[in-house]
Image (cartoon, rainbow, N blue to C red):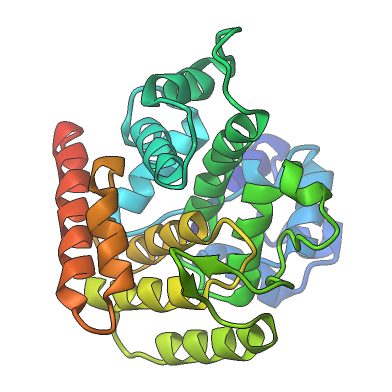
Length: 302
């Protein structure tokens, strides 16, 4: 649901009503009715309203979710609140997800970057580790913003772009940042899907997933396993896959799962053996749900 509290405040300051926007801005009565119903307006209309009130579009509108976890994350993100669920999700998910993929940053260093935007001189960590840490913070923000939208290739590619832009990989002509891979790759000694087959397989995976009438945590785990088997990007597939899982858990009011670096061996085993034994990856993700539940309990979020 959309709240136009900010817009209503601006109207009150000007001494005008919603209906006056048809005359002043040329908005249709149908568009004005959407404001009253809490329906989403087009970016063009929001831009016109922001220009009229001399403010940012986000000052006029706020998305309200009936999912208490998502709503808490959105409110704390908007308020730039320190020490809450949003803060801890940023630090813990970024540290664990990056460390699983080989980042040398410790959790304390990750926390320092998030909280102070600095890193102690002499820490000796690769620049890309720092860049991808900051990028992961922004990727989580993007997930929170688009959580309730249907999962699409555009969202998945945007997540990859956010993570990998400006890194050393982005300077390589053959490394497609924000696009599917151009070169074959091998993970853990296993071949992944050939680049030429990736677009069709991703469309098929998304179509089947989005056609489901209901989504459970098991469905999200299964999508994650299929995504990682396809390995659609040249690099960054694990982090993108776990961000997708976070988004879909928030979309369907499912407690997200936070895979800790200490459970990496179980997680990789679960992915590798998914076709033969689905319980290993499922159990690891359910354990990750328990990790997230402890966070929720600490902040008394039900």
